[in-house]
Image 1 (cartoon, rainbow, N blue to C red):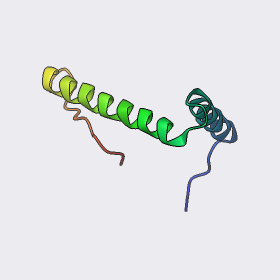
Image 2 (spheres, rainbow, N blue to C red):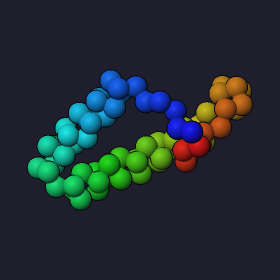
Image 3 (cartoon, one colour):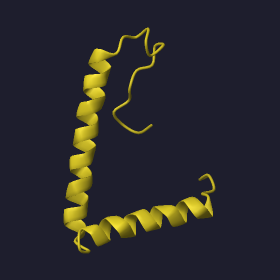
Length: 68
């Protein structure tokens, strides 16, 4: 059974999607490419943070690179 989604959150997501597409002139491939570049950048940042932060500093927290 899927959890119920907040109507306002779904509306905000649609607005974000529309904004991304508008920024790229309705070119979905360009929008997806930019989002994939953002994901790669954030994964690199997460890897750097994981290497620099001690386990004590994060209280044992380990980053997850994939959604659960």
